[in-house]
Image (cartoon, rainbow, N blue to C red; front, side, top):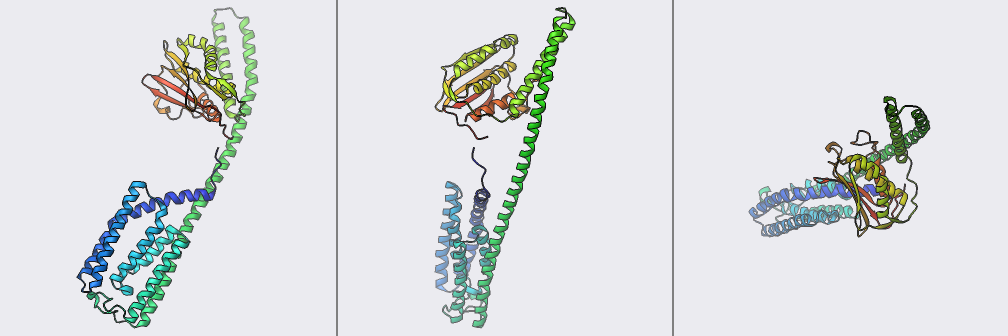
Length: 441
């Protein structure tokens, strides 16, 4: 059995699943909103008299739309890959800088997008080289924009609708102050995003610790209850054995065929049934002992179990047959016979009078399969998904431990037991590997 995942392993799994969903939603939203923004920027650029602005706007819009479409197509074809997130964010950072240049450089009305984007990058990327690279690129862009406007390197840096010219008439000191504050705001926004990611990580760890503590407490309480219940059941076996023996002695002195003898027979049968229930409960409550592995002829085991149940089948009016080519696996013969006993007994109890129980043993590529098929209706619909839970049974006199124990033993061998209901009856299928793969207790 695989050991429980550590907090870090669980966090990485939660992180991958969470940010895969976030990244997928980001791609969907971007595919809708970003083209609207780009087309608006393109319209403004085309209306501006500066030729370079129109050319850059057309190329940038075409490149961005191609990128968005390619990423969306890739996500739909191969699923969302979080490893592509840093590259996507880096390309978006470049696109934002281009949009700012097209709409006024440092004095662009779209500049607040930089700070929002830095915060989003901090949340999604966390502290690391990728986030540092994006923030550094954004900060450098602000410094370059301040230099371009302060030195008048681009005569028409400001859009014509905003007055045109290399800048909006501010003194160079104000431009450098805006750039410096912008760099500070970028660092703060990215730091807040990273801190928010850290808070989310701490919340996940706290939830994992609380869950682990609850499970450990529940497991300890369950072990105490199982131990106590097993002790009580064990103590009850001795009085029941005494009652059964005394009832047998009393039955000898009763006239045969009388009403008292019938009542005593019912008493003895009920005591036997109670002892059987206690035996099953004890088998369920105690941990599975290690397997004593040897070659096991499943067909021979099935014939032995059928012989043991021949009288019970005859009383129920059910035909019992073993068929199939047979198969041999390595396992614990005693435990595997116990599985077959439980499955065959259930099949006989479920079959109507005149029905048949067929036990088929056959080899498979992995090992072997034993199918115990009856003509009964299968479990009631309300119990169909719970028949392997302890204490769950559809039989009036059932204990609800038979299938639970059968599945536990099968899984101890590395196999499985399943119940398949259909129109032609119900089948319990035991699948076993050629070699047992015993689970850790």
